[in-house]
Image 1 (cartoon, rainbow, N blue to C red):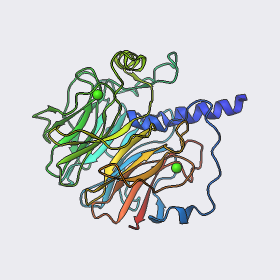
Image 2: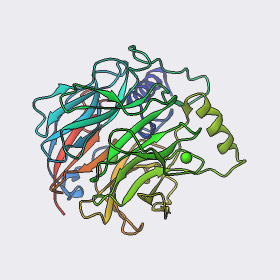
Image 3: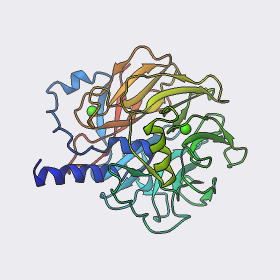
Length: 363
Ligand SMILES: [Ca+2]
Ligand SMILES: [Ca+2]
């Protein structure tokens, strides 16, 4: 590998690291990743579920765009370049009327609308420090920060009136809300990445998972009775187990493969949905609650060609949705099921750009 290609790989990895929630880190290109294959000439035919694909942003890093429950707006995180810190934005679903809704301080991630569409939740580090938090050194190899300054905030949809819903040391982020108004989120408050739920005002916190390893990135089913998430559970005493907890104490995580799980909203009946050894993450429910759409590099386990896949909630019926050879992730159906929003590195102007796309969904 020559200096230039080394720099390109390092730049891409660095750029992708701007999207700092643990599962966004999975999109970072590992060192020495092979070059991207050409875009298939018949991409449109291969992606038969998607029509009228529209790119809503056109530079920098944009990801985790999620519909408002009335289907009129998207909330997403964005930074203009790899070295800036992500801030939270809201825009109409045609990409117009874009406005920042976080206060410009710290780093933010994981925005979501409340069920009445009048408020938003997101995670921010600004309560710990106004500056963009520093990245750790790569002295321990290919590891990424789980910023301990993240807490979850709730604000009006225009960004005003932000109040903290969590005030615990360590990472609290990845909050999403169910139809009943309850929030599921990820926290390291008990020494591991686990799922917790809380009422919409931050009260009545309940721990949902109790498994060693990185559990997170959860979404409620449309009827609010089940929760889909990603996780990985190394055996106690293995080198992976020991290293995972040693790194987590330093606020670090080495990106690994993760599988999809579903658990009842009360924490009962945990079941594993995928078992393919790849990095599977960001599972979102189809509007009928019968299937999940998610991102995985299952055809490219050592690389960053993540694609969107559908799978039945019982783990059968895997179907590939996107076929672009670069990153596709963070899918979400519109509330009426007629549109899909996702983040992708396709059509990028600058290597490492990630943009927000919508498409009309063809069943
Ligand atoms: Ca865990
Ligand atoms: Ca892809």
